[in-house]
Length: 115
Image (cartoon, rainbow, N blue to C red; front, side):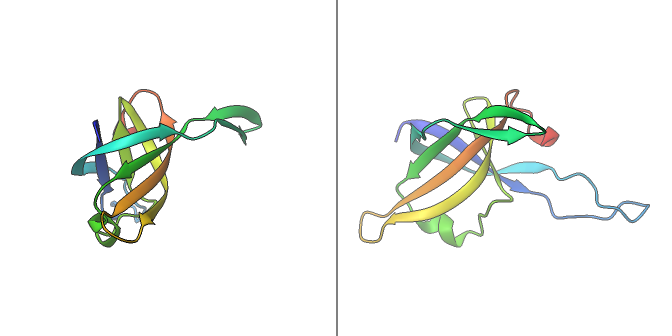
């Protein structure tokens, strides 16, 4: 568990002066050390063009984050990239507990609020 990640909590939706929703911002809620591994690269179609999806597994020792309300609206920052959280799952149901996050990179610049 030597790689550091940051879990980013989305802001609560707010109405602007015209009645629409303001842009979502993300703030650091947790900083954790995890073990990372690459998922097999896959290609998917985005706006009529095929792109390679950079998906990784992030494994942590604690299962408490499953009860912290983290879902796929949250983001994950790792190594200068921002990742969309696809799934959280408990991968060991007895001690020691391990939780796995599956996440896909969504930008290359690491700019959190451009998501």
